[in-house]
Every structure is written in C-alpha cells, then in structure tokens.
Length: 189
Image (cartoon, rainbow, N blue to C red; front, top):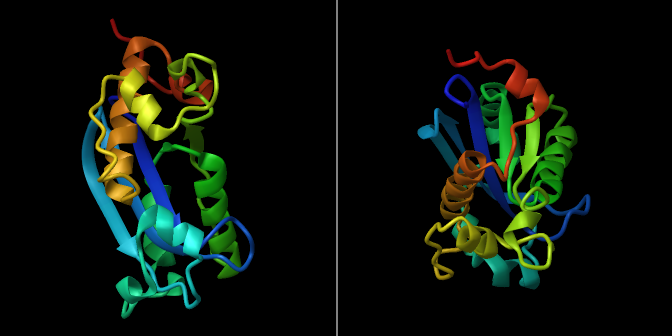
C-alpha cells in the first residue's frame, strides 16, 4: 500500500520545551519507500544558547557535544530539501517535533514544505490498555518491536523503532494512511 510513497520518519532533540527562545539541537529524518529505508539525514546543531537541565536529563546532549556544529541557518536548506521529497512525515509526538520545525523555519525566514504529518502517539491510543497516548516504549511493546530504554532518546534509534511500529500498525490495520494518500495509490489487480 505504501510502495510508491516516500514516507519520512523524524525526531528532534531540543534545548527545552517549545517556546520562542528554545532551539533544535539534534534532528534525524529517514525516508522510506515500500517499508524500506532509502535515505537518512542526522544532524547535531549549535543552538547558540544553553540547554535546559530538564532537556539535558532526557536526551543526554550537553553544550560541549555541540561545540563546532553548524547553526540552524547553515542546515535549514538541507532540511527543506529532505522534507520536500516526502509525501508524509511521521513523528511520535508531532505536536512537539513539527511545531519546533515550524518555529525554526519561520525564525530564519525559510519556507517549510508541507507534507502530511502523521503522529504515532495520537493515532496509537489502541496500543495502551486504557486508551491513553502511548510512550514510544509502550507502542513498541504493542507492536512487538524490540525497544532498549538505554538507547532511547537518540533521534535515529527512536525514529527507526517508531517506523517499525508505523509499518506494523499499517499492516495490522491499526494505523491508516490519510485519505489523500490512499487515493494516490494504484489499486492492486
């Protein structure tokens, strides 16, 4: 069902919560076609500001880890090209990740491509016994995807696990492609 679509999976790490003064410090975007990864782009970014202690506890990235990395202005064009190649982008907590991208693109005056955004967290309430939004670990458990908490919160690891869950969820009928994408797919004979 997804053979002709290019579906991106993305994740970000940031200096803190989504407020105008916080910045992206790590991004990862992979592109999948037919359920197979065909491209990946990972980038650490100098935010030109401090990282909140709460955020650093989550992702373990320090200011020293970002020394000498490019600023957002230097990598935004690559992000724009990658996003323009996909039909849809998948996040686990799209409200956070996509809104950070929106804020950062706007901050530097660059047009953000507008693929369809899919959120495995909000669409994954089937994965928990009480219907709450699942953590990525809970989604992985429900989808029978191996998950190592020691490796979590590294953007590439999280995206690979999320996309394994996304494709299993599609296969099992728990996730559904948005109608606009289903209509663009050829019908199997």
